[in-house]
Image 1 (tube, one colour):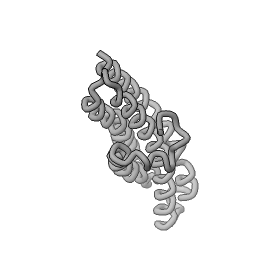
Image 2: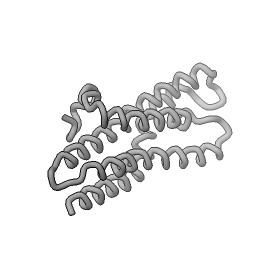
Image 3: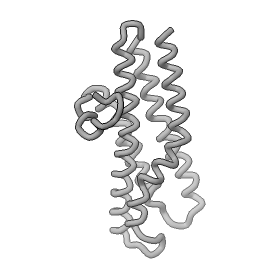
Image 4: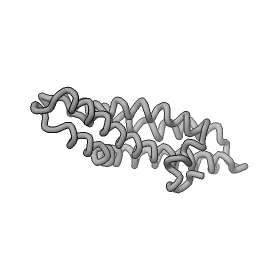
Length: 155
């Protein structure tokens, strides 16, 4: 029963993240977009630099979310009355589906624009970092403590 409750909580976290990820990733990628300059007036180097800065911001913020979910899942899985092996697939979906949907929405939105968007290009990198980051956090939790030790559930 407690396993089912944990799964439902993970699903709720994923639904909330699905709505908030667009806003938060846009804010996190804003410095890179500003550094890239105005579309049509920027050089290729500015675009690449802005994309990298944007990807770094987006990745740090989204990996913080992944760290909280993995930390919470680890705490829940360590309980005797919870089947921990069932929680990790749901934790993966909770962390990966929102970023995937954010990328899909951003690509659809970017088709309407004439020039490429720095933040959309950065999202491609962020999706890869999120995918790899989940497994790194699950199998090497000390990495979470290094940069995200200030977050709750990260021990």
